[in-house]
Length: 408
Image (cartoon, rainbow, N blue to C red; front, side, top):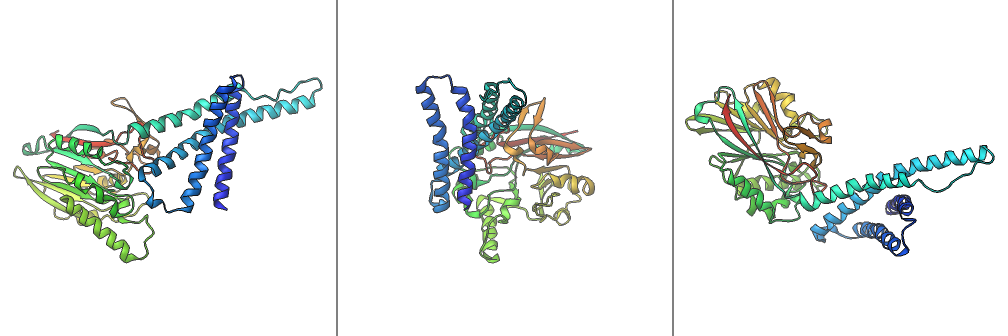
């Protein structure tokens, strides 16, 4: 029954949006119209076949690349068609009003034809997400961008001047469909010759196995004083239906081992005190902590912070940027920089460096991408290295963060 309802929904959307195509092409030659009509109806035929196949077979045996892009293409196609519908609905209301007026007034002719203008407008608006989201899949999922900022720290010892920190976040290895392009991100990281590399959570989507094919990629990251990491909300396996708690724990244990296999220092509500040029630098790492109720609070900053009081520089790794305002800036004012991720910049938005930055995620997270400051404290929100759900990016590119510390 659910499959039939989905098929019916698809066909209604198809039939309705097809009216705009018919209106636009009514004066075109027969051959061209036949080609366009055929191309239009190939999409619902493919979509229905895909839907039936998904529900009747084990998709884990499918080619991951084609499954991901087939599913995404259907989503984009029907999102675009649904944007056409409001213009046709306005046209139908207009036609209904004219029909009523023709009945109420003798001698008034009723023209049943659709508005060519509204059909064109609907097709134009519908083409925007179709073209942009398709471009985002083809061009941007592995188009890594380096974001470089100098961060002035008040009271920073001269010995720590110029400390080079690279941050990555939200790998989401379960979403990768290609392996070779990911190596470009590692090359970009190592090219910065970082003193420290931080990873701020969401190594996988749901299960630890997703990272198996990528360990020989990410273990190539090099940093003078080490790579430090924390967990994100996806890393705990909370979004997977486990047969029992033992299986869930075994998955998390494997993820812990993956961090070790990579040579990363996983901080679970803990810290490391580093001696850098005879200065104490505290790298503090908390488990996932969110101010939003839909995400878990595993983080214990008090536990992680304890013992770092005398450090000359305190750097916090916390996956969710809402933690900064919820606790860090109120109770831990000596933490110099907090490194977060989580938002991905929604993988969609507009960025004009130095001028304009917007994404729908800003209405959920006030701090959603880039560097933020409150008094002497900083937050950097990484836009994510990977992707989740939609296998691409539009306007918000995958990020490697490079921060250099300066004395204020």
